[in-house]
Image (cartoon, rainbow, N blue to C red; front, side, top):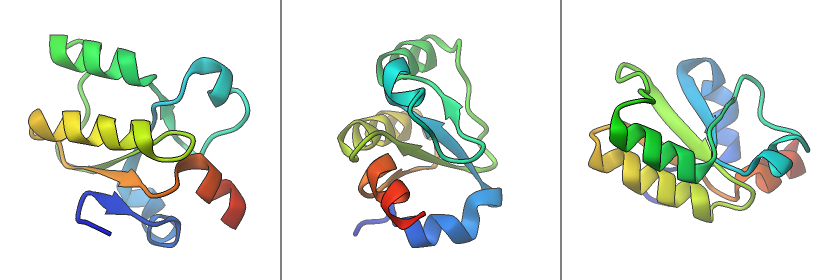
Length: 100
C-alpha cells in the first residue's frame, strides 16, 4: 500500500473526515454506492476539473473509488496533478461491499 491508497478498514474510521467521489459510470452507480459519496464519472471528473467547472475542497482528503480500483487510481493520479489531496480505495466498491 502507498500513501495514495486507503483500505476499506481505514476508510470506515475516517468516513466523516473525507469526501468520497464515485468515478464509476452511471449504470454502475445505480447498483449502490458508499454512504455520502458524490458521483462524478472518471471522464467527467477529468474534463470538468481540468476546465475548472468541478472543484473539490482543498481542506479535506478526497477518496476516489470505482468498481475494483483501476479508475479510482487514474482519478487520484489526475487530481494530484491539480494539487488535490486524494487517495484511492483499494479494491474499490467491490472491496467495500464485501466487508459491509
